[in-house]
Image (cartoon, rainbow, N blue to C red; front, side):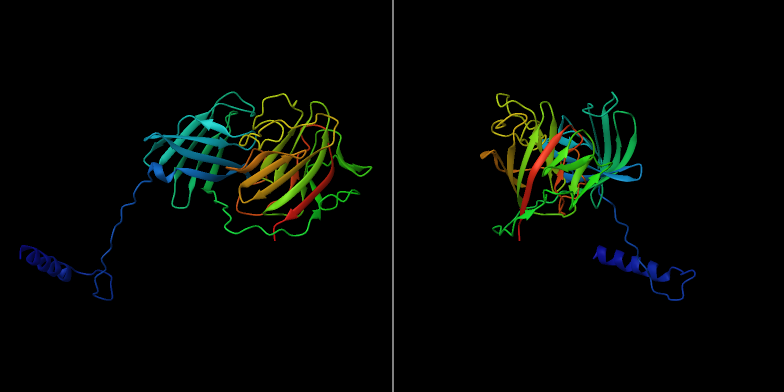
Length: 325
């Protein structure tokens, strides 16, 4: 009964209140909502990041995990280099931060990332080891999970053995075709297909000189490493046939420098299989995110095949892709 009396009294007060500057006596009740700060669980997951690098977009990637019951840890991929562990991600009132030592960047100070969780993703700033500060935004990375069996189309010769038709150099071009061989005699520009692809089977034949280095980027985002590593060396995600910084091959199945070798790579969603010179070294494993040197971080989009020409002399003689229908 007391509640009813209070409600009637409140109603009377509202109806009796003057309405200044209003043509209608109708009462407008405004509800004020309190925005709740994001919680640590909102940061957990994989993030495709775009850095505003002096007006030009540059790709990056972050994964945040829960270690135990209260500590956030992670992995981070910068504009270049490979995935680096983050020992601790600090989180307080919707904002997060971490620092990691420099890798391939110039400068000696730690890379420092500070950000916040927003309604649409994450945003913040990155200070690189040279002390330069950039803004970034990030969105949750897509799962890329395929639910139906893959049907394959017809093979496409990406390199015609005659010229650079269908390719473009990212910078001043040093690539040329000699006797049917696609050749980069020195470090220079990377080479990218004009066509873009989603899921595919890719056959690549290549030859490197002693001490040289190259790589094949799938969708322009995931590098399968080509490097002069002896087969006796312990396999690593950074060495021959590894998905750079993420996936380690079962062995170094290389034939060595000045030998024609082959990769047969199948990419379906995030799942990749790498066959080296007829031997399977990575079998249907998930690629977590982009690798350093990626063209962009838009993982849900189709992308080109891109071959690395900025790490030393390299030759390719056959590049054939069979796209999914």
